[in-house]
Length: 75
Image (cartoon, rainbow, N blue to C red; front, top):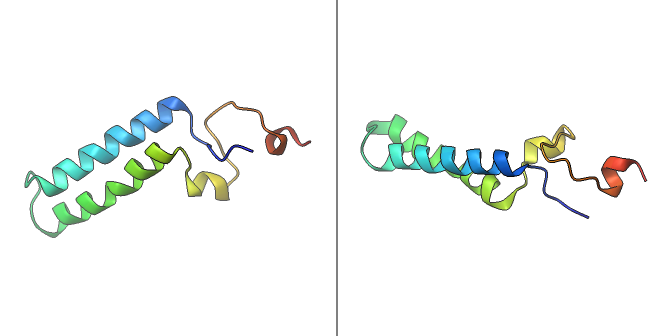
C-alpha cells in the first residue's frame, strides 16, 4: 500500500516553492509579520513535497501520480 499521492514533478515544485517561501520570509527580503508568515507557511509545501503525501489530496481522493494501487484500481 502506497501512501504517496504526489507525482515527481509535483514534489519538486512543492520543495522549490517551500524553500523559496522560507528564504523570502526568514532572509529579511520580506520583513515584518508577513515575512514571518511566509517563512512559516513555506514549511507546508516543503514537508509535503519531501514526504510525497498531501493531506488535502487524501481528503478529496486526488492524486497526481499514476501509480495503480489496490485502492485506486477498486480491487
